[in-house]
Image (tube, rainbow, N blue to C red; front, side, top):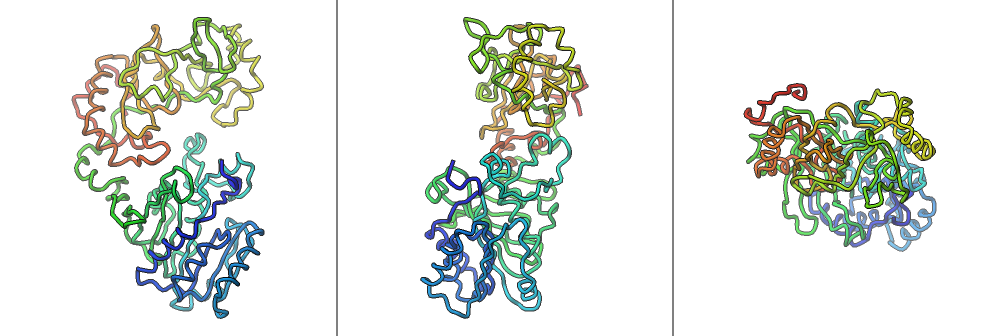
Length: 483
């Protein structure tokens, strides 16, 4: 974990800020006003002043007061003309109120604005875990529905929040925004253009070598867009270093796609998947509820030998197993405290060994923070579908879309973890037919054309639901899973 993570504090190397400002200055763009919303020691500011002599007003916001003296010392050393107005506000960008003088100037003149910077590349949850408080007031900024918010999709990137806020504040003015961020942040900005009502055009994302520039391994780059009017819903991805076009992503009519050229070849597979994709069981207590089968019996994550009733133990399949095309065996088993989310866990007393084990580890189980665990010792992601014997499954995390056929193990249905999406069947023939078809090259290429492979979880229920299945796959004896 890098120093300063509790604030998302990463200073941008001067070589990189110079390269970025040189790129922007080649676009017949002459801004008079510069806004740096997370200024730090000011590397972006001084690069901008070097490449844009047209700048007459610099407006900086920075949370940490320690950077102010460093910044103004660099101002003296840079011999900036006295006619250039510089404001440095020690404030939190989440709550900062931009001056009325700044807004009046933008409204009453033809001044162009450049919003430039490197906001934190961390999520609100990551900052909170590191002990930081540099996060906005909690809100469901993407207006997710209840279950999405509860299961973690409301965790958001700090840079995304800052960029959206700046676009909403200054999007009606003439100028540009150019912000370093993770690629996933740029993707979300384009994806939620309509929801956020953003006025931008000509969006581009210039990939950087984040290992070289920042010493970290994450897909990142410079998000650039024109302000002042609504325009393209398509974003080009290029290399910052040579400008080479890599691919285009964005909205094609009502479809959000990751690779326009690839999608053009495989969009005949766009549709609605006929079965419901389920996510594996969520428990947030793997050391307690997941057991390893050894020659000496079942051991939990603490190395303790565990004896519970056979009725509550089921074969457990971790997402990491789904590099295999078929799964026939496992050494891991999970304790299922419910068969349906509404089951009363107080009735577990009928399993005395299990009840004693759960009571022994009650303190740790009670510390689980997710609101999906509504009852003591409960789990989530369970229902009749979980107990069907055959499952066609995919890990959400891997970049290569491999579908696995999970067989029953020891006469019981195997239960995937919550990194897995699956459909389940009573019929081996139906499961086999679907599994073979999903592993075809056409499906693989279609998924790559709509999924963002650099995302933490490229393959989600939303992505998988877009697969159109041929009619011959729909001849199944149990229709309850058909949508």
